Structure formats: C-alpha cells, structure tokens
Image (cartoon, rainbow, N blue to C red; front, side):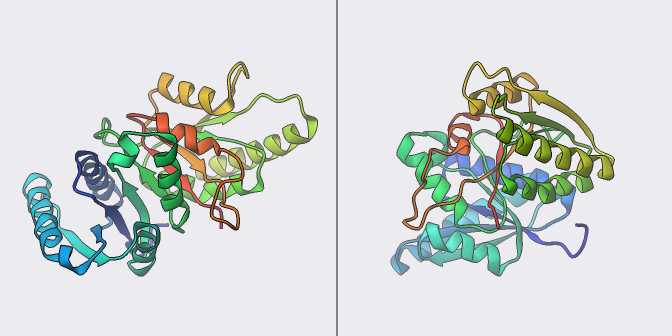
Length: 265
C-alpha cells in the first residue's frame, strides 16, 4: 500500500471535537506521509465567505503549531452526499471526523453519524477526544460471522505497513454450530493474513455474559486500545438500518478510543 500518496480528509464544523480530529490527522500524516485536506460544507452560498475565513484561521493555527500545510475545501451541499463525493474526488485514503454529533451521542445522532459514514467508500475514523498516543500500537479487531468481515484485512495491511501494531482479535461466544463455523473461518482468515504480514496478534473469546459489542468495548478499554476497527452494517433500500448495528453502540461509547468504520464493498 506504499504507492503514490493519497490524502487524509478531515471534515470540520469548527467545533472543539473537530479540532481533535485534525490533531489525529496530523499524527497519522506524520507517519504515513499523506497530505491533509480539510473540508467544510455550507448550506448556501451566502455562508461561503465567513466559512472561508474560519477555514483559513484553522489552517494558519495548525501550520503554526504543527508545521503542517493543509489544503482547504469549501463546498455548498449536504454532508450526506458531499463528504463522500469529495473523498472520491481527492482520492482520500481515510476520512477522520469529529463533531458535536459524535461527542454528545443520542440514538438519533448516532444514526445520523452512521449514515454519513456509510455514504463513503473509504474508511471513516470517528474521534471524540484528543489523541492520547502518537501511534496505533494496539488495534482491536472484532471478528463476526459475516463474509464482509474479511474486507477489513485491507485496513489491517495499512497499519502493518506503517505502524508496529499489535492486533487483538475478538470473537463472540456462541453455541450455534453454524455461526461458530463462520466465525472460526473469519478468525482463521485474519490469523493467516496477519501471519503473512509478520504482525503480532492475540486472540480472545468474550465471556458472553453481556452483549458482544459491550464486551468488545470493555476489552478495548482494559487493554488501552488505540483504535477499534469495525465493519459497518449496510443500509436497506429505504436508507435505514434493518437491525441496530454493533458499531452503533461502539461509536456512541468509545470515548477516547478512535473507531475506524469500514464499509462493505
């Protein structure tokens, strides 16, 4: 994956937590050597001038603090459409976003956030707190029974190439033999991939005393994880979730742990 540099995209609403996302982007950029673009979307052309001044101020402050050049992108449109559109246009490798809708979670806001994430083809990292660690040393990787779960391997490769990450593979406890077979197949696939990359990893089976997503998050907190990688649940034809997705709970409760959401192809 060390080909021509792509771009890290940071949408901003100029909130404090959006500033945290930019701090994360700077730290990732320093490691992967990819440039950063910062995006703000307004609803009408009358807002462009003021938004442009705010973007310039953010860029100047970041340049002064981190000595990093950032490209501004200002659009009139909708976050549900234009974040994904811009990510495609600039060939983004990743989108890193933090906003008040992440920071102050309720059920509607989580759903809003997930709809923004699932509109984008590239992985989305959501941020609630400023970065604690300069690197992603410990990455939590939940293993489920879906075939899409194996698509996360490409993102594992990203961290293997640029970080000396240790991966924590976590599978649910189940007595259903069909589900267990699918989970074990995904675990074996992840294990083989990591072994080929020469990566360090540890395997866990959660106790099953609580919902799987809650046990994943508790384990991530206990090992002081730097990142949780989840596969998003596809929307139905009406643009809604048919079931409450695992990532909804994790996004709402991860607090200081960044969450990378990978959309199925």
